[in-house]
Image 1 (cartoon, helix red, strand yellow):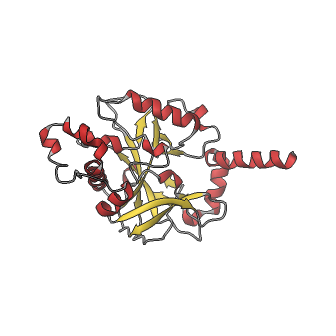
Image 2 (spheres, helix red, strand yellow):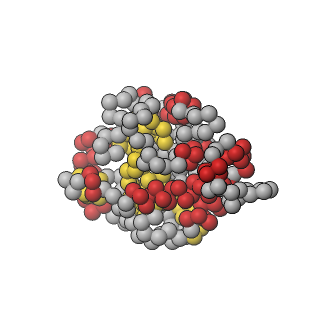
Length: 284
């Protein structure tokens, strides 16, 4: 019984330690070589946001045009919008989201067991290759401003991502986190058009990028090949493509753009490689 209790406490500590300031401070010193440092919030951009947006639009446009189940929704859109997808809409069958991703972006990623001991699930490039500066994945979840309640959702939750401006993204696909996300997604529905993606909560995400919460931390032996980049969805982002964004705001706010976090490649990444990010960024 004692051994079981110790294991339970150890598991809880592993899920909490990344939010325990003294532990973070000690480990920053231990892993100084793996730290990512920027001199200002404005410089925490590996590639311009316009390139991130263009990459997402390219993939989401291909996904929407490829999905037969979305054909009725497409018919409800203005003619000018329908014309974007006219050449992509299939007549009989569709490719899988992963195949669409490979065709649109030149690579495909997938979840699998990490090569690191006890690291659990990770993300790998399974087909094609990634060029430096490409948008490789997205961090899904409910977006909380620093003043919004997240205590209950954060208990035993290792998937809470903290942005530089203290905005939080809860990327957990189970428990209370899952219930909150689904509730918020239904609130923002606009007629037949969904304003976010809920499929990342399942084993078959319609947006194959939405697995960023499973990318493991780098180490002195395994250097980071991707990094996090905060991305606020621009006003001109096509409305019909919002259904593939794997994020939703905890409170509906039309004055504040939707915060997303993408993972961008730091170098060329080849087929078979595991993705590693850096969990710690210091802003001077």
